[in-house]
Structure formats: structure tokens, C-alpha cells
Amino acid sequence: MIIFPAIDLRQGRVVRLRQGDPAAQTVFGENPAEVARGWAAQGAEWLHVVNLDGAFGAAEGATLNLRRLAEIRATSALPIQFGGGIRAADDMARAFDLGVTRVVLGTAAVRRPQLVETAVLRFGAERIVVGIDAQNGRVAVAGWQETSELSALELAQRMAAMGVVRAVYTDIARDGMLSGANVAATAALARASGLKLIASGGVAGLEDIRSLTEHQSDGIEGAIIGQALYSGAVELAAAIRVARATGSGTSQVFGGSDAG
Image 1: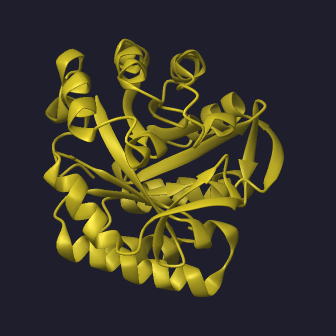
Image 2: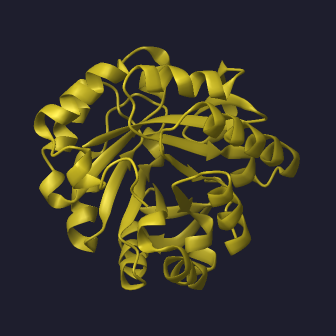
């Protein structure tokens, strides 16, 4: 199983939000490229980068974050999974031009599902990831500021029918709270949808990583860790060791660092 250290960008800085609340922000770094180098030095195999301003519709901050993304790319050879404010094919093309390996579509998957199908055909299924962010069982959009009528399973099944093979599943109530990953819900969604899932939200310690790896056969293939890494509750190198000890390794799960 692969561990993805999260780099959430807001106004050019590395931040963490609690439960996606823009008013509950902690700044962890002024230099995202330096943060990325740090994760690479600790053995990271992928980076998960989020343009929070893009997700919130803050144009000025979103543009600055794209510059920070380019700086991360220039300083690190690690493959990047990138999301936040990607609403059109041109947004995806720009991200790929900046060196991103995979893009994550969240709001667009709910409001413009045809765009997802077009993206899979144009860019390939390995380069497109759907973000399924659940709040009380319903999918949240627009930077988690709005809740749709779709359930997580309904969205997952619709996306699978369109050729999507992979999704990031976030339990919003646990995001940034260090309350433990929702392993059962993630595994159940993977089994029911047939999608490969990357778990996000709530990882508090190595036991969460061990629990997630036990469900790889259900379709859980990775975990995004943010708050636990930045707070020191989890050491990245240790998390990677645990994931590798019971996992199948990068080459089998993702096709190596050149996946996508």
C-alpha cells in the first residue's frame, strides 16, 4: 500500500484545515517545495497536492498555488496526484503540463459527470481520479461547503460505469481530527463499487495504516496522511515501513513511479 503525504496549498502556503473548514486553518510551511523535498527525503513515493483556493473558488490564491505546484515539480521527481478546483478539460491539461501524474476530480464529478467520461477517454483512466468526499453519507462539493443529494456509493458506481478505476475517499468528519481512519466504510465502498480506493481523513497512528493494509484485497490501495504527519503523531518513514510490511508494493499497486 502506498502512503501519500498531503500538501494542501492555500495562498501559497502549506496548511491543514479541520473538517475542511477554511476558518479552522493551521499553517505548517511557507515554502511548499521545501516541504515536498522533506517528504521525499523521508522516503515518500508519491505526493498528494491540493489547491484549496481552487476548491473554494478563490482565483488569486488558486493561481499562486499553481506556481507553487510548478516549484514542487521543479524540485522533486516524485509523481504528483493533484486536485482542487479542476472543473474543465483545460484545467486538467494545464495540470498535466505542469508535470502532474494524476488529477483528482471532485465537484466536477458530481455536477459535470460527462466531463469525467470525456477525461477518461482523452487522458486515460490511470490519470483520472475521482474525489468522493462524504459528509454524513452524502457527497460534499465546492470545497466541502455544499452537500449534494448523492450518496458516496451512488457516485462511486456512476463513476465506475464511466470507466473510472480509482477514487480518493474522504470521511470529512474525520479529516484533520486525528480521530482514526474510517476503515470499515472505505473497505465497504471499495467492495461495493469495484473501484480502487485511496483512504483519506482521520489517520491518527500506525495502527490505522495496519488496519487499512488488511483490506487491500477489498480494493484499498493507498492512504493520504496530512495532520498526523505535520503534528508529529506519525513519522512518514515508519508509516511507509508498515504499509510495505503487509502491502504488495508500488510495482504491483501503481505500476511504479511512472504510473499514469
